[in-house]
Length: 80
Image 1 (cartoon, rainbow, N blue to C red):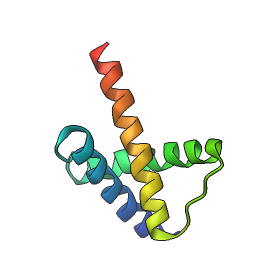
Image 2 (image 1 turned 135 degrees about the vertical axis):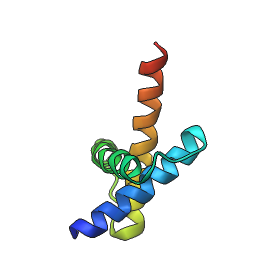
Image 3 (image 1 turned 90 degrees about the horizontal axis):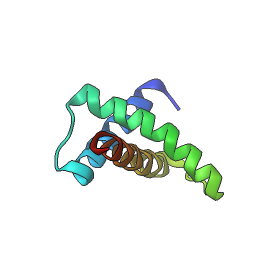
Image 4 (image 1 turned 60 degrees about the vertical axis):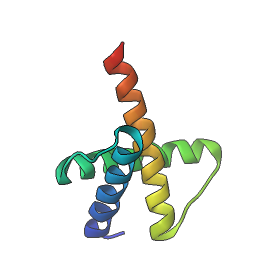
């Protein structure tokens, strides 16, 4: 996957996860960061479950799931 597509998927996934978890995004750089880390986490979690997602939509779903999990973990750590 090209670097530009990776950034676009990361930005979209971060924005979607931000809207799901706290009602807003994090700005363009924050969305990309959350989405890229979420993509790594989502890929790891999906591989543990034996799931695969291909193509743009599959990558976006994987990154979004990972970003939501990431934001959930961060919210639990901050409240503790």
